[in-house]
Image (cartoon, rainbow, N blue to C red; front, side, top):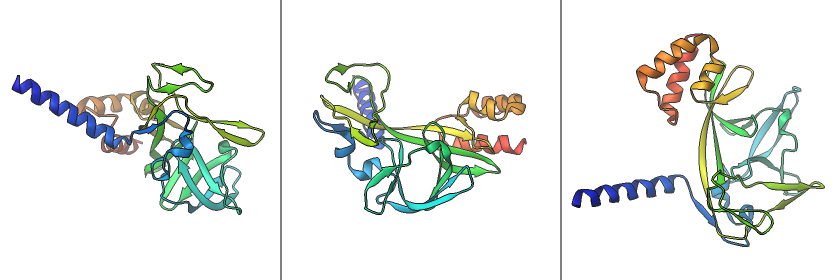
Length: 231
C-alpha cells in the first residue's frame, strides 16, 4: 500500500507539473477568452515589438508586432494604437520580430533552428481542452476532439465569442519541419519521409537506432541535422 501511495503521489505531482508547464487558464461563463486571458499568457512578447513582414512579392513592411497564441494571429498596432491582425497571411514569406522568425502555414510557425535551407519550427497555441468546450450560441458540448477558440469576422469587425460555461484553455505544442521553399510538414516520421524522400531508408534506420522522440526539440534537431548531412 505504501508503494502504491507513493506511485499515485508521484503521478499526481508529475501531472500537476505538466499542467503548470502547459499554462492552463480557466475562463468563466459569460467571459470572452481574448478579453480575460492576460497578455503575458496569450502573447509571445510582453509588449509589441518592431518587426518586419516580408511578402512573397518582394515587398516588406515594418510595424509593431506581437503573436497571439489564443487567436493564432500575427497582430500589429496601427497609428491610432489599435490592435489589428494581418488580413491575408497567405501573402507572407516570413515575419521577423526581434530575434524570432515566423512562417505562415495554415497558422503561424516559429522557427527554432535553420540548418542549411531546412527549418525546425514550433506552433504553440492555446486551445479549449475536451469536455470543457462551450458552443457559440448557448449550448454545451462535450466533444472528444480538441476545439480551437477563434474569432468571427463580419464586415471587417471582429467579434470575440463569449463562453456560456467555465472553459479550460491549455497551451499545446506541435513541431514542424520545412524545406527551402518554406513548405512545412508535421515533424513526425511521415513528415521527415516527405521532406527528405530520397533518404527514407537512412532516416528509418536512424530513427530505429536512436529511438527518436518526436516530442523532444533536441531529438528533432538531431534528426534534422542527420537528414541535412545526407543531402
